Amino acid sequence: MKLLTKLTLFITLSKLAIVMLFVFLLPNLIERIASKYTDDYLREQKKKVMTIISKNGINYYLQGEESMGSYTMLKEEYISLAPSETAFYPDTIETSERIVESDTLNYRLLTYNFKADNKRYLLEIGKTTATISQYNRPLQKIALWVLIALTLFTLVADLIYTRFLLAPLGKIIKSKLVNRRFPFNDDPHPVITSTSDFRYLDSSLMTLMTQIHEAFEKEREFTANASHELMTPISILQNKIENLLGETEVSDLIQRKLIEMHRTLNRLKKIVNSLLLISRIDNEQFSRSEVVSLKVLLEDVMDDISHRLEEKEIGFRLSLKENITLKNCNRDLLYQLFYNLINNAIKYNKPNGDITIQDSYHAGSFYQIFIEDTGIGIPAEDIPTIFNRFKKSNLSEAGGYGLGLSIVKSIANYHRINVDVSSAVSRGTTFTLVFPKEIIY
Image (cartoon, rainbow, N blue to C red):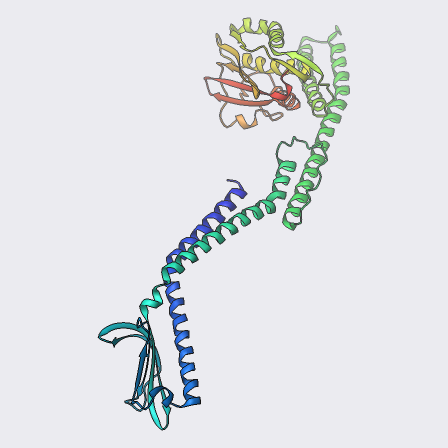
């Protein structure tokens, strides 16, 4: 899952969790807020009453009576002033019942004990709980809609900012990691970003790519130079052995030894030539300007290798449904690619086995060729390394030093052809060549 997707999912779920938690707590919060507001309102009313009493005296309310009680028309608010029956009565705010004109009502009630004109009085100010809670539901709806609106706004803002924040990371991935071809010959440009972490990541990748490119260049230069330098002593040794073989004084035993040495030198010469070929391919010393018909090319390969089929009595079937032509390629290199693959299919096949070449075309996308054989197969643990130089499967078989498939891989990479292998021991091997649409004519 992409980082942007994870962050989007996290932001959305966190906002949803906040909304759900708020919805769950909203009734209690509204009730607490309403209760707190009512308590503050009762205290303000008490202050007003006590201010009037301090200015005008207690008689302002009692009007010569022993006590005073008053309430609104709908009995929503209630005030009472009466002599205190005890020397001390605690000041409280609580919910309590009061009987007003034979109606028993629940009030949020403030009680206050004070002294005026050398007498103790008890002040009660109340507000019905029904009036306190009558606005709870509308307030809940308003608060919920405000919360949803704010949540949606912050969600959109978070997603936009997250995309803006991660945009440099996407540029780094596209410019440094996606569709980059080893050995990174092009010069990458740094991604402009104000995020120090992304700048560090970008510079680290550029440094790593430079180091890989330099290491690859050194290896490639060493391989090319070593292969080139080896050709001279090999040729000299080969000439000397051939001259010795022409001498009449050489005994039969020495001749046999010289012949074995000559064969070894020939094999060494083939290895050096293969290394030189790989080096030239890696250095892009071959042109890619030819147009090649794959069907004609495969027929030419089969004409040159048909005697090998007859020797091992192997059946061959070329079944190409599409007449595909490739552009911007090198015919000789493609010939070498198919020759090596078909030669291996013959070399590691069973007597009276079969080789089949068929294709599949996904219009506008890519083209595939499958080279199947009924040979001895490749063990699963060897498949990841079969293209490595000097790493060879089926070592019990004669011939070959593991460079044939390395040449195949180098040629394929040079033409941006993907090579895939599937195999089962004693059942056969299938090489799949995937040609990109860019080189299909």
